[in-house]
Image (cartoon, helix red, strand yellow):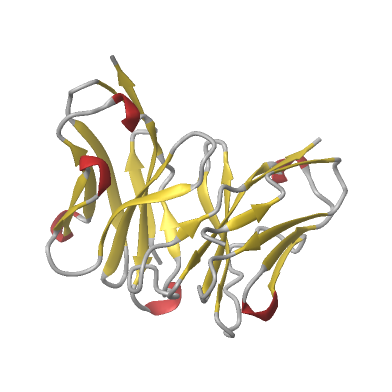
Amino acid sequence: AQSVTQLGSHVSVSEGALVLLRCNYSSSVPPYLFWYVQYPNQGLQLLLKYTTGATLVKGINGFEAEFKKSETSFHLTKPSAHMSDAAEYFCAVSETGGTSYGKLTFGQGTILTVHP
Amino acid sequence: GAGVSQSPSNKVTEKGKDVELRCDPISGHTALYWYRQSLGQGLEFLIYFQGNSAPDKSGLPSDRFSAERTGGSVSTLTIQRTQQEDSAVYLCASSSSGLAGTAGELFFGEGSRLTVL
């Protein structure tokens, strides 16, 4: 079985400050990991994904995330927040085998607020 | 179409009525997913179709919920005898592969917002 835990349902930062959104997962097989963003009244949009290879992955809008197997984490970061980054962010895991093959399981989401 | 299309975008119904929500995936995508997004609950997996395989219905919350996918394309999610707790945004997504990480990402529609009075 797979699960995702996002630490902090709300994160607030100042414009220009570091953004750090935390995600921990559990998976019985090697996972694929994703971050999605949802702007108000819109569908989800892929920010970045980890499948295999380099553990530091870069996505759109200056975001990046690092897969740390030993910590079962996939935290999302951005060096300098912009007002347009305000949205809800979802971490997700997809198992590459077993009974949950192909199914994407999401965390509860983290709402990011950016203050001027 | 260019993206995943869902209809209706908003639906208000009375408790006890049946509703149907429609999803038109991206042409050629073999995998189709339904998720439910409730306030404070995150995204809850409902059902997953992959090609002609039997769907994974493990996320359907009760037997009032059912879904079908005709001709490997359009999908309809049906909720019978709606209850107030069914109020949520129902999201559909499609993928070119059943395994979300391989041939590409999941592409989401904008959702159908269901309100049960």
